[in-house]
Image (cartoon, rainbow, N blue to C red; front, side, top):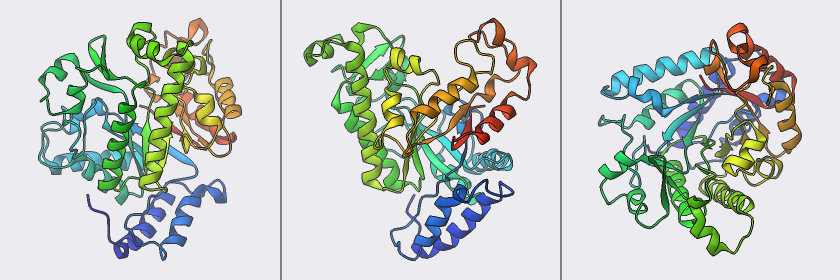
Length: 381
C-alpha cells in the first residue's frame, strides 16, 4: 500500500485523532492524547507520507490468525471488508484504540510478501492487510502488525511449500528445527535476525503501520538437544544464559530495524505473564527488555490470571511488573477475556472457578489498571 500524500495526510490525521478521542468521554490526563497532539504539531513539517498514530494510554485488542478462517477464507474483498469493519467498529465502541493484527503467525504472510508464503486462510486476490489497515484507520485506530518471530509451518505444511521459500530451505541447514510436528527458527543463528529484519522492513516500507508487535513465542522447548551443536560451538557454559542472550540479540535487532525504517513506528513485546516462566521456559529476559531503553517502546505481559490464582495472582503480578518497568518503556496489562465463563485448571483450588463465578473480573482488572501507573490494557478474547 503506497504511502498517502502529505496533503491527504493532514486531513486524515485530524479526523483519525478526533475519532479515536471519541472512544473516551475525556482523557484521564493531558498526556493520554500526547501522541496525537504531537503528530498534529508536526504535520506542517513532515512531507514523507503517513504519520504513525499511537496512544500514550493504550486500550488494545489482539486479532489472531486462527479466526481468519471464519471471515477471510473463501470471502470476497467486499465480504472481508464488511467483516473487519464490524469487528473494528465493535472494538472501538468498547473503548479500544489499538489493534494487534496477526500478519506473520507461522513463517507465512497475510500481506503481500516477496519473502514468505501466503497464510493458509488467505485465498483471495486482494490484499487483506491493506483492507484491515484502511478500515482501522478510518476509525482512528492504531494498527500494530503482529509477528511470531520463530514459529513456522507444521511439518505437513512445510513439505508442501515450494523450495524457493527461505523457511523451507532452512529446514535443510539447521537454522529451522522441528519440535513436536512444527518448525521453528533457531534464535541462536544470526540469519534469523536478518530474516526478521527483512520481514519488518517489508511491512513498514509497504504499509501504513503504527507499530510492530511480537508475542511470547520465543524458544519452543527447554530440551538441550534443540540447539546442542550451536551451544557447544559457542563456548558458553550456561545454556539458560546463552539462550536468553540469543533472544535479547534478536529482540534488539528487531527494535533497531523498526527504528531505522521509521523512528516514529513503535515496537512492542507481549511476553507471558509469569516472570519465572519467561526466564526458565522461553528464555526471555523480560527484566532487561522492560527495564532498559532500547529493546521495546512498550511491553504487554499476558497477565491472564485471576485475582485468586495461587501462583500468579493478578494484582500482585501486575505490581511486580510495575517495579521492573523503567520510564522509557510503557507497561500495558494483557488481560485474558477468553477465560470468562471457563474453569482455570492452572489457577489452583482457590482460583479454578473464579472466571465462572466472577463475570465482572475483566472490568475489575481494568479498574485496577486505571488506578495504577500502568499505561493501559489489551484484551485477548
